[in-house]
Image (cartoon, rainbow, N blue to C red; front, top):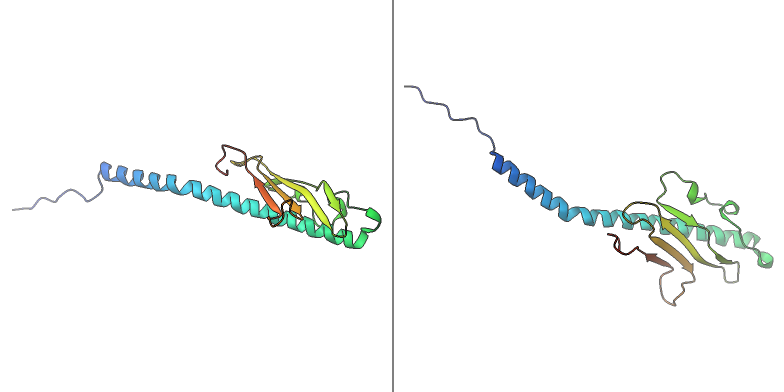
Length: 148
């Protein structure tokens, strides 16, 4: 007598559906944290760029700052204008208040986020900080964004 072969092994539709649902739930939990981490990295990139601009302004002041002269724009500095870089995430505004001192001060330098979920977020640098003991960088996130 011959034995019947059982059906080929495999997963049922219900089992596959449960796996898909579990993966979707895990993705829904992980993605917001991922996007926040990406925005923090982009903000850190802006603070590094503004720190480089600040250093270039300080170098310019040491070399040329006698008699109250201050640099008029990115073209006078020894750093590349960050607004000309490809794939830039921020628009950089030259500081509105520079004093070649002494002491050398750079205030109200701003980088505004281009597009993305955190569009119009602003990173501002004030050296010295506007509030004693505070960081020279402040972040302003638009209300209602995942970055706030």
